[in-house]
Image (cartoon, rainbow, N blue to C red):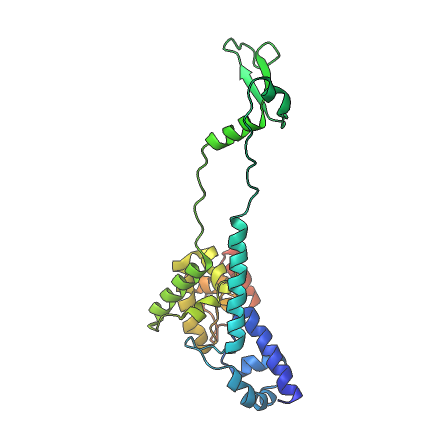
Amino acid sequence: MSLAERGAYIELLAYQWEDGFIPDDIEELSRMIGVSVADFRKLWLRLVQVFPLSEMGKRANPVMEKDRIEADRKRDQLIQNGTKGGRPKKPKEKQTGNQKETKQKPNGFLLLNQNESKSKAIPDTDTYTVTKVTEGQAEKIVDETHFDPPEPKPKPYDVAKDALCAFAEALGQPGPSAVDIRRYLKPTSGLQQMVSEFGQELAVRLAVEAFSDWKGRFSWDGLHRQRYAIKAKLDGKFPVHSGGMVSTAMLAAAALGVEHG
């Protein structure tokens, strides 16, 4: 492998590590690494062998993809282990009588016991008495307090799988593979951000609209960058030029929710 081929190979691996794939388009690939199309065609004769085409019409180096999946798995495992962590409770010592009063240390919690004969809006020492709460009492108060558990957030894998399946069904294409799904697990990926902002149904509708306009150049990251223009086109506010390119004025109008003349 020549020096130029090795440099282009490393550049494309870096793009794949970030996005999970590289596009199957020589012109776009040449722009990504900063060489002319003619020069890149010579390099691509050797590099095409190490970036085979996937089922979704993208190219990816299988060794790099295997390393990415393993790195994502380890990261998810570390996150899961962190959610299970926490300092274990100390065993409680059995104490009676004066021992509990002398050995237990106050932890700063206070209880306010209000008398039944409260008559003033502002409490004073006649209507309230201050009682120190021991550590054991404080733990009991916390344990007996009812907290509604937060609604679980959908896992990134489920978000990517559901969106890609709906997208493939809308296009009449086969469903995504596990490798395709793993490419969109990062919160910063275009797919995850589109679903987070618009919901799955609208995100898929926008993806189908962009796919029909951009032909073979569709990507979820590109969709996220031009999401307001595509949504405005879907709403009938203005047309998008062939190739999916929009002007700065059109993007600004879409972001502000106004008509562009």
